[in-house]
Image: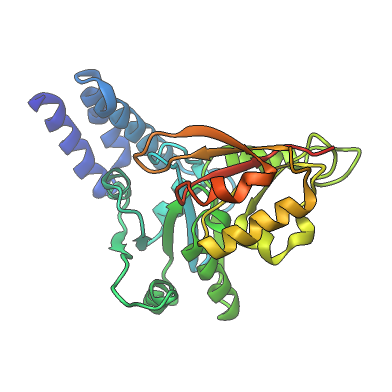
Length: 290
Protein backbone atom coordinates (compact mmCIF):
# COMPACT_ATOMS: atom_id res chain seq x y z
CA UNK A 1 0.00 0.00 0.00
CA UNK A 2 3.02 2.33 0.14
CA UNK A 3 2.79 3.36 -3.56
CA UNK A 4 -0.92 4.34 -3.53
CA UNK A 5 -0.52 6.10 -0.20
CA UNK A 6 2.45 8.08 -1.56
CA UNK A 7 0.29 9.18 -4.51
CA UNK A 8 -2.51 10.06 -2.10
CA UNK A 9 -0.22 12.23 0.06
CA UNK A 10 1.17 13.98 -3.02
CA UNK A 11 -2.35 14.78 -4.21
CA UNK A 12 -3.55 15.87 -0.76
CA UNK A 13 -0.64 18.32 -0.37
CA UNK A 14 -1.27 19.75 -3.84
CA UNK A 15 -4.92 20.22 -2.96
CA UNK A 16 -4.07 21.99 0.30
CA UNK A 17 -1.83 24.35 -1.71
CA UNK A 18 -4.73 25.16 -4.02
CA UNK A 19 -3.29 23.29 -7.01
CA UNK A 20 -6.44 21.24 -7.58
CA UNK A 21 -5.92 20.49 -11.29
CA UNK A 22 -2.54 18.90 -10.51
CA UNK A 23 -4.03 16.81 -7.68
CA UNK A 24 -6.54 14.96 -9.89
CA UNK A 25 -4.01 12.61 -11.52
CA UNK A 26 -2.25 11.37 -8.34
CA UNK A 27 -5.62 10.88 -6.59
CA UNK A 28 -6.77 8.70 -9.52
CA UNK A 29 -3.43 6.85 -9.48
CA UNK A 30 -3.90 6.09 -5.78
CA UNK A 31 -7.42 4.83 -6.49
CA UNK A 32 -6.25 2.58 -9.34
CA UNK A 33 -3.54 1.01 -7.17
CA UNK A 34 -5.83 0.28 -4.21
CA UNK A 35 -9.32 -1.05 -3.45
CA UNK A 36 -12.25 -0.76 -1.07
CA UNK A 37 -13.04 2.39 0.86
CA UNK A 38 -9.62 3.96 0.27
CA UNK A 39 -10.01 3.68 -3.51
CA UNK A 40 -13.54 5.07 -3.31
CA UNK A 41 -12.33 8.03 -1.25
CA UNK A 42 -9.49 8.81 -3.68
CA UNK A 43 -11.86 8.78 -6.65
CA UNK A 44 -14.21 11.11 -4.79
CA UNK A 45 -11.36 13.49 -3.92
CA UNK A 46 -10.27 13.50 -7.58
CA UNK A 47 -13.80 14.53 -8.56
CA UNK A 48 -13.79 17.29 -5.92
CA UNK A 49 -10.50 18.62 -7.27
CA UNK A 50 -11.78 18.51 -10.84
CA UNK A 51 -14.92 20.48 -9.91
CA UNK A 52 -13.01 23.08 -7.90
CA UNK A 53 -10.35 23.53 -10.59
CA UNK A 54 -13.02 24.56 -13.11
CA UNK A 55 -13.98 28.21 -13.13
CA UNK A 56 -17.75 28.64 -12.62
CA UNK A 57 -19.57 30.24 -15.53
CA UNK A 58 -21.52 33.47 -15.21
CA UNK A 59 -21.00 36.45 -12.97
CA UNK A 60 -18.66 36.22 -9.94
CA UNK A 61 -20.50 35.02 -6.84
CA UNK A 62 -20.84 37.43 -3.93
CA UNK A 63 -20.28 35.29 -0.85
CA UNK A 64 -22.16 35.90 2.41
CA UNK A 65 -20.32 36.27 5.71
CA UNK A 66 -21.43 32.82 6.89
CA UNK A 67 -22.33 29.49 5.26
CA UNK A 68 -24.13 26.53 6.86
CA UNK A 69 -23.34 23.41 4.85
CA UNK A 70 -24.63 19.84 5.11
CA UNK A 71 -22.69 16.67 4.27
CA UNK A 72 -23.84 13.03 4.16
CA UNK A 73 -24.80 10.97 7.19
CA UNK A 74 -22.06 8.32 6.88
CA UNK A 75 -19.51 10.17 4.74
CA UNK A 76 -19.21 13.49 2.88
CA UNK A 77 -19.98 11.97 -0.55
CA UNK A 78 -23.60 13.18 -0.48
CA UNK A 79 -22.75 16.70 -1.51
CA UNK A 80 -23.51 19.23 -4.23
CA UNK A 81 -21.32 21.46 -6.38
CA UNK A 82 -22.83 24.49 -4.61
CA UNK A 83 -21.65 23.17 -1.23
CA UNK A 84 -18.18 22.42 -2.58
CA UNK A 85 -17.83 25.97 -3.86
CA UNK A 86 -19.21 27.39 -0.60
CA UNK A 87 -16.67 25.42 1.46
CA UNK A 88 -13.91 26.55 -0.91
CA UNK A 89 -14.87 30.19 -0.29
CA UNK A 90 -14.47 29.91 3.49
CA UNK A 91 -11.37 31.10 5.33
CA UNK A 92 -12.53 29.38 8.55
CA UNK A 93 -14.61 26.18 8.80
CA UNK A 94 -16.29 25.14 12.04
CA UNK A 95 -16.96 21.42 12.41
CA UNK A 96 -19.07 19.79 15.13
CA UNK A 97 -18.71 16.26 13.72
CA UNK A 98 -16.29 13.88 15.39
CA UNK A 99 -15.89 11.89 12.18
CA UNK A 100 -12.23 11.55 11.03
CA UNK A 101 -13.37 11.10 7.42
CA UNK A 102 -15.23 14.43 7.47
CA UNK A 103 -12.18 16.14 9.01
CA UNK A 104 -9.98 14.63 6.29
CA UNK A 105 -12.40 15.83 3.63
CA UNK A 106 -12.41 19.38 5.02
CA UNK A 107 -8.63 19.33 4.82
CA UNK A 108 -8.94 19.47 1.03
CA UNK A 109 -9.87 23.12 1.39
CA UNK A 110 -7.55 25.94 2.33
CA UNK A 111 -9.58 27.05 5.34
CA UNK A 112 -8.56 26.95 8.97
CA UNK A 113 -10.50 24.08 10.58
CA UNK A 114 -11.91 24.71 14.06
CA UNK A 115 -13.59 21.90 16.01
CA UNK A 116 -16.65 23.00 17.95
CA UNK A 117 -16.74 20.35 20.65
CA UNK A 118 -18.92 20.30 23.74
CA UNK A 119 -17.47 21.67 26.98
CA UNK A 120 -18.56 20.36 30.39
CA UNK A 121 -21.24 22.54 32.04
CA UNK A 122 -21.36 24.85 29.02
CA UNK A 123 -24.79 26.42 28.34
CA UNK A 124 -26.77 25.02 25.42
CA UNK A 125 -25.93 28.09 23.32
CA UNK A 126 -22.25 28.02 24.27
CA UNK A 127 -20.95 26.54 21.03
CA UNK A 128 -23.11 28.87 18.97
CA UNK A 129 -21.78 31.89 20.87
CA UNK A 130 -18.19 30.73 20.28
CA UNK A 131 -18.81 30.41 16.54
CA UNK A 132 -20.51 33.81 16.27
CA UNK A 133 -17.72 35.44 18.31
CA UNK A 134 -15.16 34.06 15.83
CA UNK A 135 -16.82 35.58 12.75
CA UNK A 136 -14.92 38.48 11.24
CA UNK A 137 -16.28 41.09 8.86
CA UNK A 138 -14.83 40.80 5.39
CA UNK A 139 -14.06 37.11 5.88
CA UNK A 140 -16.29 34.19 4.95
CA UNK A 141 -16.70 31.43 7.52
CA UNK A 142 -18.66 28.19 7.44
CA UNK A 143 -20.25 25.57 9.68
CA UNK A 144 -20.45 21.91 8.63
CA UNK A 145 -23.17 19.59 9.91
CA UNK A 146 -25.11 16.51 8.81
CA UNK A 147 -27.72 16.41 6.03
CA UNK A 148 -29.72 19.65 6.40
CA UNK A 149 -28.83 22.43 8.86
CA UNK A 150 -32.43 23.47 9.46
CA UNK A 151 -33.77 20.18 10.78
CA UNK A 152 -31.04 17.73 11.65
CA UNK A 153 -28.90 19.45 14.29
CA UNK A 154 -30.11 21.79 17.03
CA UNK A 155 -26.86 23.80 16.97
CA UNK A 156 -27.52 24.78 13.34
CA UNK A 157 -31.06 25.91 14.15
CA UNK A 158 -29.63 28.13 16.91
CA UNK A 159 -27.02 29.51 14.50
CA UNK A 160 -29.74 30.52 12.05
CA UNK A 161 -31.68 32.30 14.82
CA UNK A 162 -28.62 34.20 16.08
CA UNK A 163 -27.50 35.16 12.56
CA UNK A 164 -30.97 36.54 11.91
CA UNK A 165 -31.00 38.47 15.21
CA UNK A 166 -27.53 39.95 14.64
CA UNK A 167 -28.19 40.70 10.94
CA UNK A 168 -25.35 38.39 9.85
CA UNK A 169 -25.55 37.63 6.13
CA UNK A 170 -25.74 33.82 5.78
CA UNK A 171 -26.75 31.07 3.39
CA UNK A 172 -27.56 27.41 4.11
CA UNK A 173 -27.24 24.31 1.92
CA UNK A 174 -28.47 20.78 2.63
CA UNK A 175 -26.68 17.63 1.50
CA UNK A 176 -28.19 15.40 -1.18
CA UNK A 177 -30.36 13.08 0.89
CA UNK A 178 -33.77 11.62 1.58
CA UNK A 179 -34.64 14.94 3.20
CA UNK A 180 -34.22 16.83 -0.06
CA UNK A 181 -36.17 14.21 -2.03
CA UNK A 182 -38.93 14.34 0.56
CA UNK A 183 -39.31 18.10 0.30
CA UNK A 184 -39.48 17.72 -3.47
CA UNK A 185 -42.25 15.14 -3.23
CA UNK A 186 -44.08 17.25 -0.69
CA UNK A 187 -44.33 20.20 -3.06
CA UNK A 188 -45.06 18.22 -6.23
CA UNK A 189 -48.85 18.03 -6.01
CA UNK A 190 -50.12 20.45 -8.70
CA UNK A 191 -53.78 20.02 -7.78
CA UNK A 192 -53.41 20.83 -4.11
CA UNK A 193 -50.54 23.31 -3.86
CA UNK A 194 -47.43 22.88 -1.67
CA UNK A 195 -47.44 19.80 0.54
CA UNK A 196 -51.08 18.94 -0.12
CA UNK A 197 -52.73 15.77 -1.35
CA UNK A 198 -52.45 12.11 -0.32
CA UNK A 199 -49.16 11.58 -2.14
CA UNK A 200 -47.34 14.57 -0.70
CA UNK A 201 -44.52 13.62 1.67
CA UNK A 202 -43.56 16.18 4.29
CA UNK A 203 -40.55 16.31 6.60
CA UNK A 204 -40.54 17.86 10.08
CA UNK A 205 -38.32 18.26 13.08
CA UNK A 206 -40.09 16.77 16.12
CA UNK A 207 -39.63 19.86 18.29
CA UNK A 208 -41.05 22.06 15.53
CA UNK A 209 -44.19 19.92 15.38
CA UNK A 210 -44.63 20.02 19.15
CA UNK A 211 -44.57 23.83 18.95
CA UNK A 212 -46.78 23.90 15.83
CA UNK A 213 -49.23 20.99 16.27
CA UNK A 214 -51.65 22.28 13.63
CA UNK A 215 -49.08 21.50 10.92
CA UNK A 216 -49.39 17.74 11.47
CA UNK A 217 -52.00 16.57 8.96
CA UNK A 218 -53.05 12.93 9.38
CA UNK A 219 -54.12 12.82 5.71
CA UNK A 220 -50.52 13.29 4.45
CA UNK A 221 -47.49 11.02 4.60
CA UNK A 222 -45.08 12.56 7.10
CA UNK A 223 -41.47 11.95 8.16
CA UNK A 224 -40.38 13.25 11.56
CA UNK A 225 -36.78 13.51 12.77
CA UNK A 226 -37.03 12.56 16.46
CA UNK A 227 -33.89 14.25 17.79
CA UNK A 228 -35.41 15.51 21.04
CA UNK A 229 -35.54 14.91 24.78
CA UNK A 230 -38.06 12.52 26.34
CA UNK A 231 -40.45 15.32 27.32
CA UNK A 232 -40.74 16.55 23.73
CA UNK A 233 -41.03 12.99 22.47
CA UNK A 234 -43.93 12.35 24.85
CA UNK A 235 -45.66 15.55 23.68
CA UNK A 236 -45.22 14.44 20.08
CA UNK A 237 -46.66 11.00 20.83
CA UNK A 238 -49.68 12.60 22.51
CA UNK A 239 -50.18 14.75 19.41
CA UNK A 240 -50.12 11.68 17.16
CA UNK A 241 -52.58 9.80 19.38
CA UNK A 242 -54.99 12.74 19.17
CA UNK A 243 -54.92 12.85 15.36
CA UNK A 244 -54.52 9.23 14.22
CA UNK A 245 -56.52 6.03 14.51
CA UNK A 246 -55.13 4.03 17.50
CA UNK A 247 -54.73 0.95 15.32
CA UNK A 248 -52.78 2.80 12.61
CA UNK A 249 -49.23 1.45 12.17
CA UNK A 250 -46.29 3.85 12.59
CA UNK A 251 -42.81 2.97 11.31
CA UNK A 252 -39.39 3.87 12.74
CA UNK A 253 -35.96 3.83 11.13
CA UNK A 254 -33.78 3.29 14.20
CA UNK A 255 -30.01 3.27 14.52
CA UNK A 256 -27.61 6.11 13.75
CA UNK A 257 -23.89 6.70 13.52
CA UNK A 258 -22.06 3.37 13.47
CA UNK A 259 -25.05 1.39 14.75
CA UNK A 260 -26.86 -0.91 12.36
CA UNK A 261 -30.13 0.57 11.14
CA UNK A 262 -33.39 -1.33 11.42
CA UNK A 263 -37.03 -0.69 10.63
CA UNK A 264 -39.48 -1.35 13.47
CA UNK A 265 -43.17 -0.57 13.82
CA UNK A 266 -45.88 -0.03 16.41
CA UNK A 267 -49.58 0.90 16.45
CA UNK A 268 -50.38 4.53 17.29
CA UNK A 269 -51.73 3.37 20.65
CA UNK A 270 -48.18 2.23 21.61
CA UNK A 271 -46.12 4.91 19.84
CA UNK A 272 -44.75 6.43 23.06
CA UNK A 273 -43.56 3.10 24.44
CA UNK A 274 -41.71 2.31 21.21
CA UNK A 275 -40.27 5.76 20.43
CA UNK A 276 -38.84 6.29 23.93
CA UNK A 277 -37.00 2.97 23.64
CA UNK A 278 -35.22 3.95 20.40
CA UNK A 279 -32.03 5.98 19.95
CA UNK A 280 -31.76 9.72 19.41
CA UNK A 281 -31.27 9.47 15.64
CA UNK A 282 -34.59 7.70 15.03
CA UNK A 283 -36.67 8.77 12.03
CA UNK A 284 -40.46 8.29 12.31
CA UNK A 285 -42.74 7.65 9.33
CA UNK A 286 -46.46 8.38 9.69
CA UNK A 287 -48.45 6.95 6.74
CA UNK A 288 -51.58 8.81 5.63
CA UNK A 289 -54.53 8.05 7.90
CA UNK A 290 -57.37 8.50 5.38
